[in-house]
Length: 169
Image (tube, rainbow, N blue to C red; front, side, top):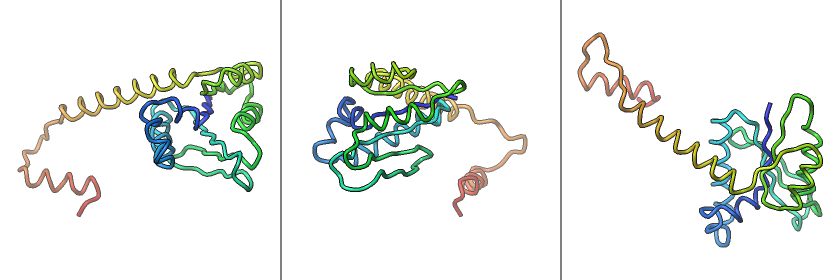
């Protein structure tokens, strides 16, 4: 099993398409990161956990699941780095390989010393972009190849079947 722990705000601050959003639409930048990581998780089969720093926000840790991703907002007075280090310790075992995605050099060394592997924000972004391109290519190839029916059907009937297949009435 492979687990990828992502320092959410580190990715948002580093990835160009998210960095441009963060100053005026932080919630949208978080949502876009979550969407991108959900696609990554679905394609790779890795378990992805995103940690967002809520250091100055009053209250306890907030965990939620969105698009099958585990999303953690740290508790008051806890940094994302501290929570990531605890997560590595929790999920690390003989059968689990843990990667941490962060460009924080000090955090990279800390998690490496705990047995986890690191991915820089840039490395992860390149992987995400490659996966997006592969998915797009697969979809285009699938659209080109449409198997011929052995029973000749009119276009109207084919369109109706397609609506039913998609759940439309």
